[in-house]
Amino acid sequence: MSMGSKELTQNDSMENGNCDINFDFSKLPDKPRNLNMERHRSLDERSLVEASPGYTSWAENGQRLMDLESVFSPSIRSPFSSSQAQYYEPHPVFVEAWESLRKTMVYFRGQPVGTIAALDNSDEKQNYDQVFVRDFVPSALAFLMNGEPEIVKNFLLKTLRLQSWEKKIDRFQLGEGVMPASFKVLQDPVRNTETIMADFGESAIGRVAPVDSGFWWIILLRAYTKSTGDTLLAERPECQNGIRLILALCLSEGFNTFPTLLCADGCSMIDRRMGVYGYPIEIQALFFMALRCALVLLKQDDQGKELVDRIVKRLHALSFHMRSYFWLDMKQLNDIYRYKTEEYSHTAVNKFNVIPDSLPEWVFDFMPTNGGYFLGNVGPSNMDFRWFCLGNCIAILSSLATPEQASAIMDLIECRWEELVGDMPVKVCYPAIEGHDWRIITGCDPKNTRWSYHNGGSWPVLLWLLTAACIKVGRPQIARRAIEVAELRLAKDGWPEYYDGKSGRYVGKQARKNQTWSIAGYLVAKMMLEDPSHLGMISLEEDKQMKPMIKRSSSWTF
Ligand code: GLC
Image 1 (spheres, rainbow, N blue to C red):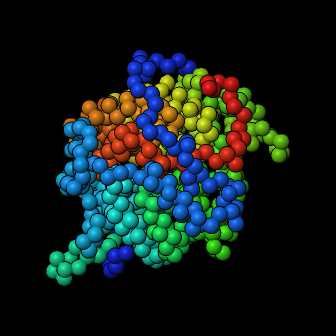
Image 2 (cartoon, protein in one colour):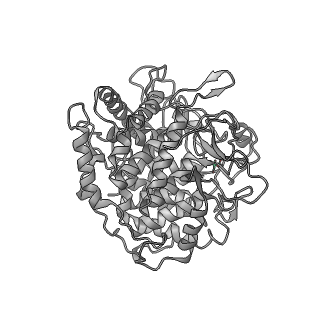
Image 3 (cartoon, rainbow, N blue to C red):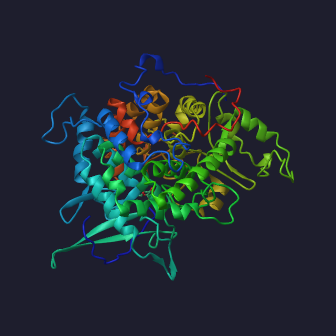
């Protein structure tokens, strides 16, 4: 954990090509139950053309959303809140997980506002006693799926209030729209008051502001709206303003020649130096998804229309760039391997001047004949060939990946099961950086040694993203298999934050126990598999207007 925290005493009011796996997937049920997302076009599928100013009023869309919600809303049926009726016999680990999740709830002035990062009893708490925005997402989804939206609504409003704080690092003022990485509720038993303390990066190790927090906030607001049918929350002026402020930070003009978002190292889930600066896939995929969610949520009033126009243009450019230059499959790899360099002119094939000698050896074996993925990073003379789980799953969920690309990502996961899932789902990235590279890239970080933590560690929280992506691609059996693997150990091991080793066999060196997002990630994965209609909260269907710009590789199977 690299975030520190600084107290701000502000009172706040409440508002090789061969698959070597020997697992018989055909024995598992194939089709997700109730996966009827296809049949119901929803508000989210508002295409970029439809989103053009003047197409539909927001109010109309709101009504459509509510109508459709009656189809998709999870009915209240879980055995985990006392008043609700039991309808299936849950796995004991599932029951335990719900009990544990409830213990992590954080209250502010009597209202639940989030979940603590880890209920850790060790002395070295650091800031795991805070509510992290990114960590709360799987908790929020679990509560929404269980028909308990209140905590999510409170969280959205609370973090929105924090956004309006003045944020300074030394004498430098951060952008208005920055959302906190985390916050904490402080109790003063003597004065009987509660205050909130937040961290926007000014206390974080490395002093990096979280770029992902704002994107997750928008994505969660859309999940809340979709799940509850309550369009009034997003419609509130303060929520509309919150979205505008977040987007103002990323849509501003500058010197950038690419539509991707330029970032500092450590500004997302991987919040330490790991060579993920520049244009990391995690941020680009979240950026894309947040833009699409914002299109759904923004009111098309005078202020909204102009922003919607800018979002639409950026989405076109971003999807073209990502699908063309970030995509890697066997054909692309072979093309890069044969690249000429030093091509000056707009007709250059090797646009970023990537030197073939810089290709790492492992990637040639790793790349299956069928399959592919989005690269970790693409910039001038730079391609990071590492596979990152979160970015690739979000690319699927947001439909940044074309349907063919989404299937190819799943083919890769199946084919490289031992490497990417192994004994604990899922690797945060693959492979680990070692030796000289580790020294240079991480700055000799002792927490990020090879196959540990952010450097090729296995993170149970990623299970929910993998599951959602599998369901979306129509291959839930892959998720089922991963959940079975995780279920064997997670509770027994005390819900660790991460696992170490090439196949994730060891509880992480410095992993917290009772890590909330490990618990919530498992719960969300289970609930989604049980009722795949939950997927609608966190998935956006393909926008037919954003035509795939990349030629299909002959290696893909259809
Ligand atoms: C670690 C993780 C970060 C997470 C935090 C709290 O710093 O890298 O992604 O938000 O712990 O769990």
